[in-house]
Length: 247
Length: 247
Image (cartoon, rainbow over all chains, first blue to last red; front, top):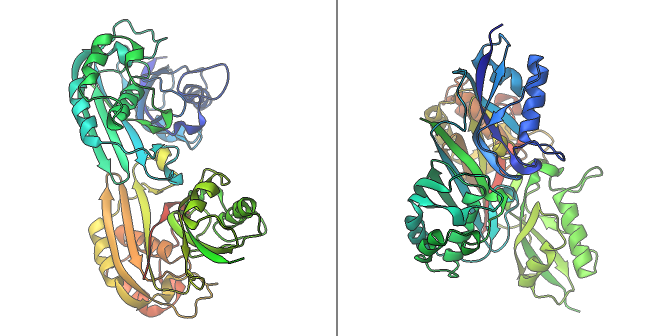
């Protein structure tokens, strides 16, 4: 029988999961996908994920691949698989790709949004999807700092220790701040992100917005090449993977 | 001791509640407020709510009042009360009002949003906050229908039976449709709404958008003055009370 490789575009609400990657304790997106695919296709399936998001992080379009001997047409798998998944995970697309296509071994462009809800009190309907702060943020200062971060840089200072990345050089194509009513959206597009990089970028920009750091100081943060030079890791709930394009 | 009347502006995620009003079974927003206020103030408190929203309906700014002998300044109650409430209910404001002020006996302007997520598959992060449909909607047709509904009309056809309203005449100041990416927002502002009125308006407009009804047909729906003339009651999760102004 012929083996084919299927690519899934996966959306999920990360609130109730211990992140993407299989762990000994607690449900993960990866384990739910493996379980549902194994039931649907009658073969033991192990997906390979593109972005291993942390606990509480959301995705509109994460990517995973797996190999199967099933004769089910690739584009039909999404419909059938969604019947076997919990409602906080929904396949948005399924398609057959080349047998050697691998989501972490090809050029890609990812876009993340980090959302900050600004108000005197938290807004319940946004509590899982935006980080709440009552502290005023000077968005213009944050934009000035963001401009220094765009481009190719060594982002080691914005990488949580424990990362296994060989190189810490990445390219940010854009880093924009958009105000949507009470929410401030930090939207960042790049060719790849280190462990916790977007959350550390957000935490550092928030310090700039609060006046704790000067906008220009982020240049020194880049040059320092150590985690302690940057700001705190912003909480997971504000983060959503919103775009994923492959070359 | 002096009794004073306090007005609360209350935001909540309605997903896990059986609506606003106290019921024999299940938690409600009203019962949570009474419980938290009674604990905080040491007196038995019964709030009077402005909009008795249904199970699953959300609010950014519902209103409630209560009387207390407490000497705590009205504007401080919000901070203290939030400590006693679950995180899906958050007081946004508290203030002292005139002792005879009653939220259902004064002129007001309420704004509701009904959100529809349009896509091939549901989007998990929006599953509790927007109604999902894969059916195409012709927004221009829906706008044409909406125009016939603005103004003062007898909305009896848009009122679920069982309502105790004396008059079914209401005024819609505006009824707008706004596309926000994959979401279509039906935003309606009026001097009051009958039981399930916004959800029946949304259900009827969706039938127009799907081509099941002509835009002009909503004029006959108004004239019929019976529930069966209108479309279905759209699901609760899409509905949020977003604005409340008093004269």
